[in-house]
Image (cartoon, rainbow, N blue to C red; front, side, top):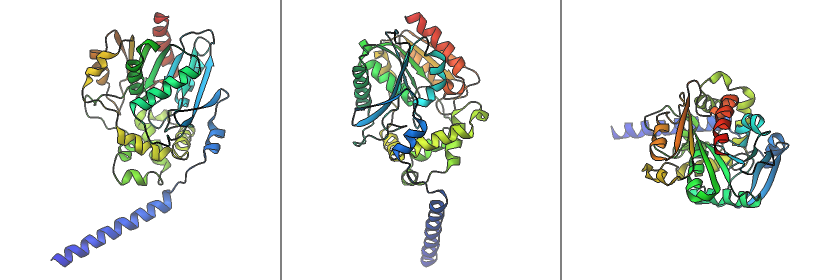
Length: 319
């Protein structure tokens, strides 16, 4: 009996090994060079600056008379390109600064593998200092929302307003389906395989999980996210970032937010439930909520016109 179980175990182990080899052969994806991806996706306004141990990719455009710029921060596995539509809508009225977080986009990984709150706070502070900006209205989506919240607490005098867009930072109020790519990136062993095996269909499925209307996930959008993810070092950075986590067990830290806050959410968010908007509002003084019925986790990308309208009206009340 023991020998039979041993043979069965050996057969299962061998089968798994063969399957992994086949997956590697079929879906292996080597890293794309930073130069190649930068050439493909850099904007006319793209610039790079050495800070935080990386060559930070950023864009600073729009109305130069605006003394309190909008600082836009993207989410996990995204880039500053997620704000393209919003920037096109608002740059005549506002100065808009956006950047690729270290670990993502055209910036690439932090050599020290540090993606902590304090590290990102220092990166933001250094960027604003370099651009001679003393005060901003900071807008963050998903992971970028968690980072924006922490920066507003870290440097309250520099944050005139805070906009949280389907923000991370708190445990989900209820269970959601989540994005399959993010789930796999948190699984031991499997997450290491994802640093070399990256099926394009997995990227597309993760994008569909993030959109309210999956019909808006085009081939070109999938290719953009795929290329950014496979930029040299970004897949390993994603695994490192996931290990460090971004959920606070206790929401009391939100009471330290002093800036007026707009909380916006898509009701069809499958990654972070819309009920989390109320959790943020309960703890943040001087906050208000807006919910879109037909949008998902990235409303500013899915419907930049609707998002820009709400954002602009709220910002005008601050200025």
